Each structure stands twice: as structure tokens, then as C-alpha cells.
Amino acid sequence: MSERKAEIRKFVAEKHAESWAVLSRLGAGVWGQRVYSEEGSNWTVRDLLAHLADAEAGQLAQIRRLLAGQQTLPADFDLDRWNRSVVAKRADRTPADHLAAIQSSYEQGLALLDEIAEANLDRVGRHARGDDISIERFFRRMAAHRAMHAEQVQRALVR
Image (cartoon, rainbow, N blue to C red; front, side, top):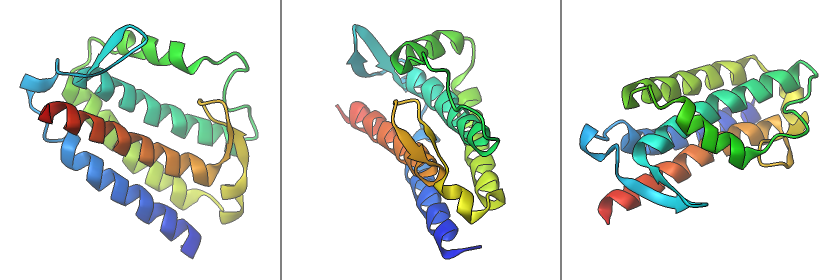
């Protein structure tokens, strides 16, 4: 494995360990705890787990499409609309389901990273946030995104 890929892998693993230490220890008593409010809706711990499970799988799919030479997202993709709909679509899933999906995406992400030729890490495609980023940045952003939300959950539970 190249030094570059090893550094990406290390970053992803570190962010996984940080966030997993928070997320995997959440008990049923906190699923309904409000983490923050956005555009008139309250995001609970359960909502954030649903969001993370979807976001990580979605970003891996974007990376795969980019590697296949395809458009990563539809031109009219609206991240805010998507995020709001995900929570509703995943309402019937348990927090354990979400955690299993997050863990699975982490493992799939590392496997995908191992398969990618180093030159392909520089391929650029549109991220859900609307900016164009490299595959390397996709991996780093996905890991940092989860760590950010885990930190928000941790702060909310301390309040």
C-alpha cells in the first residue's frame, strides 16, 4: 500500500475510532434526545444515526460512480431535501440497524480504498454539498462528517 493510501486509511480509522466510541455506547434512553434544530425540525440522536447510515453509504456510491466515469449525483440534487427525507424513510429501522449500517460502510470504505489505484484518488466529482472534490477528499470528508456528528451527540448528552 502506498504511503498516501496508508495516510488516508489512518485518518479514516482514527475518525472511526473517535466516533464509534460515542455512537456504539448510546443507550435506548437517549434515542429521542434532541441534538440540534435545523430549519424548524429537531434532529434527535436517532435521526443523526439514520442520517449517518445513509450518508456513508451514499458517499461510497458516489465514489464508485466516479470510478466508473459516471456522474456522482443528479444535477438537481438538493442535500437539505435529501437529508430531511432520509430520516422519514428510515423511521422503521432501529438504532442498532443504523449502527450496523455505519459499521458496514466503514468496512466497505476501507476495502474500496484498498482497491483504488493511487492515481484514481485524484479523480474529481461533485459531492452532495455541491463542491467538486477528489476521491481522497470524499474519504476524508466522510470520516470527518461522522466524527463531527458524534461530537454533536456527545455535547447534547452532556447538556
